[in-house]
Image (cartoon, rainbow over all chains, first blue to last red; front, side):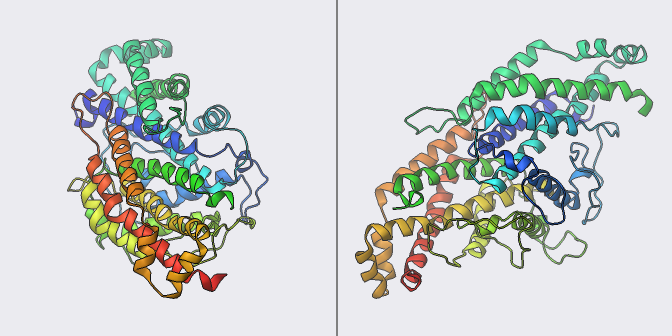
Length: 244
Length: 244
């Protein structure tokens, strides 16, 4: 099996991504929710959308020119992005080529459900800083969730016949059940909770208060990151045989 | 005194910025040094410079359009940036207007001294990710160092006559001595060390190894962040009276 698909490699990759997600959430929490940036109140010359969407799109344009979305583990939120400005690079694809992209769903969950959990109400005028943090969180969440493709490919290779049977029968529920490991999920949630407690607390603050409640970060994993990752896994597996 | 200039407010702002600096350094350390991105080996269509400089400039263009550099606590690394694409905002300036910008020095220290301390040798192909992290660290270091302007204004207001005497005499050494508080610096370094230990270690890793040595992060503060902040303070004070 290719190294990127070995369970140990996937596991340590997912564990490392937890830091990125938790750090970026803690960074966003220092600013108020700043609702204005998600609506249409801020006028942007030559752009008809929210300030946040503008920042997301413009950042993705820069990243697209630097070849980010050629990589098998990255998918963009925006459409009509420019082509890379740098020479092509032969990315290795340990997974099957695919166009699975749950980012519109991730974006809507982030704006409606996640943001109000991590930010205090109000407007502190830190629009640019808030948007920069939003982009970082969304990119980290998207990468983590779409890493389900690697997880799925690895599990598929470990039991080709078992999965092929379920895929041929169109049994999505059966696939979901087969790839679910409750013990692993519980361990992950426990780990995220402890990390969020460790990183979210200034070790010198007298108040011993959290920048973001560890329970909130655990909930974000429980309610959205884990389920969406598994959705990606099921979608990937359902369309996989056609790509053999 | 204006709230932004009260020592408590400045102190908590500087302490909060420590998280941003430490988190971003830990993020960069997951990738190899990738020297290629700082040289001229990567061809970029329509741009004659390193891949890293390209990413820095393009990111700053996006941030300039979102008004980042109108804020009194932000200065850019790039020149010829576009004007904001959003409506003007009356930023309050608790400090005197100035054009102090030590970013070319910060950039050179970062590339030559800081990077080799935090990254392992080699090339892992993660060029875009490395550059994105570089930009985040540089922005965080730059903001922290230029916050010296706030520190200086606050100290000046607390002893106008004392500072005016030294400024009139052109006594930069005397100013440096007057604004130095060794006890505060030692406490800061100790705090940075403990934070770097706390945030830089996966609480579940069996190996108990650091992503970046806390001593290295403390050294970055000791050798560069603190001295450069004080340089900003001296420069700000030396040119301040002319701005009254």
